[in-house]
Amino acid sequence: MDRNTIKWGMRAVAAAALVAPVAAFAQEEAVPAAEMVGGGTAYILNTLLFLIGGFLVMWMAAGFAMLEAGLVRSKNVSMQCLKNIALYSIAGIMFWIIGYGIAYPGDFNGYFSFGSIPYAMQGVGEADVDTGYSVASDWFFQMVFCATTASIVSGTLAERIKLWPFLIFTVILTGVIYPTVVSWEWGGGFLDQMGFSDFAGSTLVHSTGGWAALVGAIILGARTGRYGPDGRVNVFPGTNIPLATLGTFILWLGWFGFNGASQLAMGTVGDVSDVSKIFVNTNMAACAGVVVAIILTQIMYKKVDVTMALNGALAGLVSITAEPLTPSVPMALLIGGIGGAIVVFAVPMLDKLKIDDVVGAIPVHLMAGIWGTLAVCLTNGDVPFIAQLTGVIATGVFVSIAAGIVWFILKLVMGLRPTAEEELLGLDKVEVGVEAYPEFVNG
Figure 1: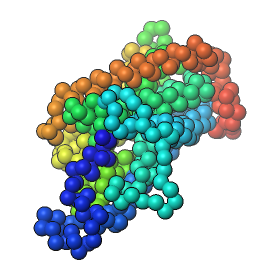
Figure 2: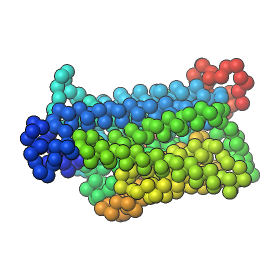
Figure 3: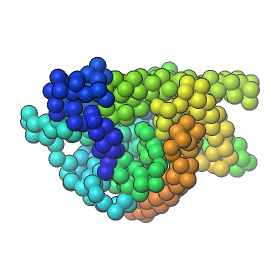
Figure 4: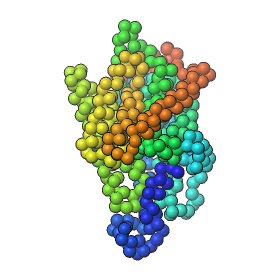
């Protein structure tokens, strides 16, 4: 039973009313007419929520592209743009061919199974009102989440991975690895049966991408010259901070679709009210992440680091994603603020471990994702902590092993890195053939 079925199963009275005339359910004392719309109208509103949320999350692909383009050096900007449009396209194709059928297989053993492959859309003019939403809108909303997972890997491994190994890894990540993790919770698998809760994907989406990125960064190694033999960390400044800032704001905007539309219904007054609250909590968590990052970098470094502020916003957003509905505003601020603090402390920690994360995606998506998942228990007393911890560990173990196997095979078969000379020249010239800033001297 997937999360959409569960959501609608909890609305037994509403489901009955969906197929009845307005006058009929207006007579039901338990469900006043003023609080619920009827059949086709509910179907339209719920479908609209999926579609609006979906295209907002799709716009996050632009946010990731701009953030990465701003934080890498000018000689690798075209490569990051190419990777982001390619990974989004691959995710769309793979999630239709195989991914959705793995993520939502129907009745299965709770660990792995195949459902409908490829995913069958509705015919022209067809609509099953009993589902409560268009199946095509559901597929689209789920697909853009899948693409987000791959975007996380792109930023971490920037500037020193060849194009084709990355794209092949994206095929496996979006077609098999991510959908398998999704099936455990949203598809009604073993985590769902334990009571695990991940409202919009702090673990299922963000930590999955973060684990894949971490393993890839360890296997791939750091950029040439990033770490000196004496423990010195050489700073490679991003080429365009305004572009990175724009990318962050685009992601922030897209997150309202990411979290808000994960309510999965907009046919009742209660649902619309909940979506509104989700918007507020999502926004406030990001605000807290920024403010905490600014204050901490001022205290620690005597200057404010704008890149930390940008990642503070994203960490706040990731942290609140596991449960954006039940927290009060003060709790949303606390959850997001701790996410911002995680970034400030985790970035230098990774450098000490000589794990080169170009855009800070591992602290933002993996570490803040773990924190947000565990923090669900602070505001939702129905969720057992052991289930949350199990979800974090199971996702980490599975994704790390699966991603590690794929990365190692790609390394042996075709190699992951360009040569040191090619890396110094820049991947725009070596692999893309189109420089982002041809009038400038690359550094």
